[in-house]
Image (cartoon, rainbow, N blue to C red; front, side, top):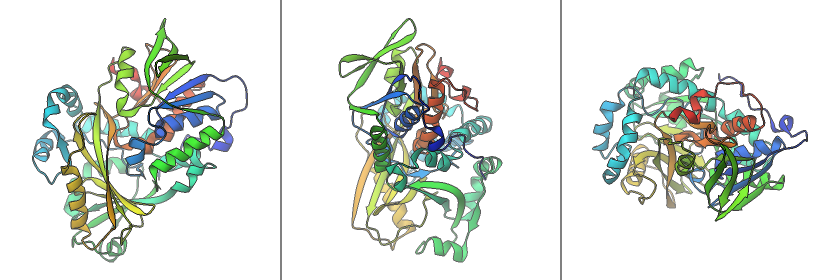
Length: 431
């Protein structure tokens, strides 16, 4: 279905010795930890620094799905007309903290400028190169580590209330088909077997093979980080708030008030990456897509595979001991507290679809997904500061694309030439 990944298994990527660089990876989410492991396997002396520790932010709270098919950006054709209506409909999965709108407006104008067919196809093609074979990328990263136990192959389904809703998404499905994704349609008895108790009589499910699931994303990233440390890597709890540059080249990074020397620094701090980039003269148009999740512990029914509940634009994932409902898009910045409405929507949509499901307790979470105006991540060396690399901006597919991003950054830092064009992700595209 999907082209085989360019990421090679860990056993064939082990370092062969020789001098390595002293590298600091700023950020201990899936992108940062993946980058650190691949650099370590290339023989570099690697340190990770994070103010909260591995797997504590967005990498903890995501939907857990290795969503290779999620190449179609939110900014598809028609969004410009639909978005205002969605904002005033409490039953739609788009929210805005209105006090934040003046600050958001310049970013939003650029973001919505890509809501057309041509840009959507271009963005999807570039995203395919990062996430199109995510399961294999994660297998190459995690095999032989304690993180392997949380990784499994699975189908991924889209559950529509009716066939008409699926047909209205035809543009996005045609893009997926052109990139090699295949699927089968489930109706009638096949649908009832996959989703017992589903109330929608005219529902349709689209089931895609060759996807993956992380059954506990936070624990997965922590396990990978432990492996990195066991192999000789260093992990620091601290705040890296300044990158020292002289004559256009990295000299060091200030961590908790003290500048420490490094040959290379990688900025992998997700939605918090903008201030470090701005110090280097690079104004990356980055916003947070605030994402929400509910965890339903010890449920009376657990789906066999993860699925997207299309009416709410959120995913439902079977995890260890619970179901996680995760998604929603809210624009409101990094500082505002969680809103109540997204939590209510997640629960009401799930209860409407599966009224017979019971669970013991509910846990809530809100996190920050890093979103650029062109819906593409920032991957590569910063022109104004040689030795400084960026790896952030994956929006809602950071877990999916983390290992491939880390592998590409390790190749660049090791002086190797990746077998794909990295221009679409270049930090310099915003200059």
